[in-house]
Image 1 (cartoon, rainbow over the protein chains, first blue to last red):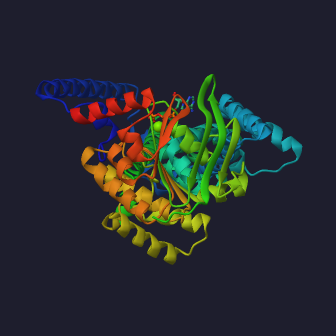
Image 2: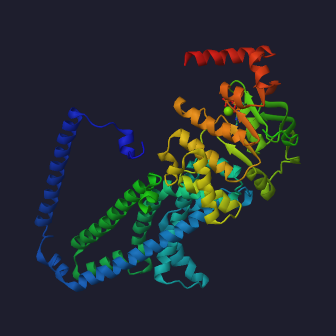
Image 3: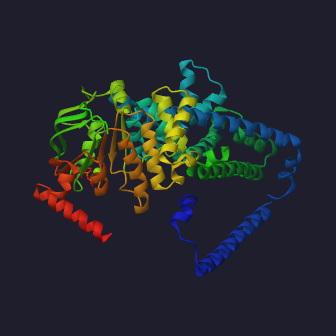
Length: 277
Length: 253
Ligand SMILES: Nc1ncnc2c1ncn2[C@@H]1O[C@H](COP(=O)(O)OP(=O)(O)OP(=O)(O)O)[C@@H](O)[C@H]1O
Ligand SMILES: [Mg+2]
């Protein structure tokens, strides 16, 4: 099964009859989709959403520059937030796997808490409660930190799953060679665990990215917030939301592709080594 | 074979339970320097547990295990240093899946013994040469056959310059045509004077290479003898039964 993807592993190759059925089902689905699309465009036309005044400003460079600035902030916030959540998640995972009971309890508590509380509550906490303590945070951190905190518990559990998926024999072999716990973890177990969890980590990055759309609450000028400004400037709700939605979809699509590629590359042990050779 | 009366591995009255199951019952056993001791016995008789206890992969309930005359340390740095002196070869190889064969051999010498990368590599290539998988050095374990993996695993253990080697059914997971190549490596190792404790179902290997055969059943050492005496004239009924069932299987193959 060295080069097989999970799909090939789970399903046998389709025979001629199955292929025919798949073809007709695909065709029917395409027709249905196109019909729906036509209906939407028709509704747009009937309600006047296609009229020039809702779209003309997309011809101006300033519109795109403004959206671009927002996009940049969104990406910055998402990447920073995700990196912080990976770091926190890693610490929590280490904590949860410790022998020390207190550390384990604290980590488990934090993990369950952050997993249970909706992101929006963390954002309101940073928006409303934190400033009252005198801790001055920029709008950027007011959205990035809560998104990171909200994600770190999930990250910790994903990492723990990866660590537990590494076969026990790997640890035993290393123990027999004289490895001690810490080095064993960083040299033998974690490098193997990380391969299992890259897809989950990228999925979490997508979630953080989507969570940053709450940035307008703390008036951080991300893509969504700038879109809202445009909407009030041009009084054009639908066209702008549509374009912004397409941008979000595009980014997440690219991230998912990246995740697939990384997963494929790392699921074949040695692929990286072979390339290097 | 270097005969020297110094005990390397010594078990005294060792007992171990898994819940209600008494897996090791008053086990006493000595392996002297340069000696090859083969343990045989039916499935579930406690052979693996015995092997793993010597490396403290399993703790024991009572009794004593000594290595080179010193009791096994219970934890920490001392335990790790002791383990490094005892090579272990597993039924399922357990090569590090994320590293090349060469890395598998050099990793522990560099990380644990602080060997220099260059020396570790040279020594690793020598060892891989010795077990006959030097041409696979750049591949990862999954790309090798079972026999090649097991030979590489033996090389990995040897890289730590162990004072004794434990083998827990090293050929049980292998296709018949690969068993020979692994047994050959083990035979050479024995001839070079390595102290070895081997759990195996390979009766011919036991007959040819072992200095002593230990027959275990139900967590006890039932019989202990030279291979000639044990195979030609087993004393207990249980050993007789076990040997005849093994011979029957061999004929069927
Ligand atoms: N971790 C464990 N927890 C509970 N019971 C165990 C555990 N490991 C082994 N046992 C039981 O202890 C007994 C001895 O196991 P052991 O693996 O030592 O036998 P063995 O002689 O090596 O058998 P085999 O030839 O099948 O490898 C078996 O009945 C087994 O089911
Ligand atoms: Mg066993």
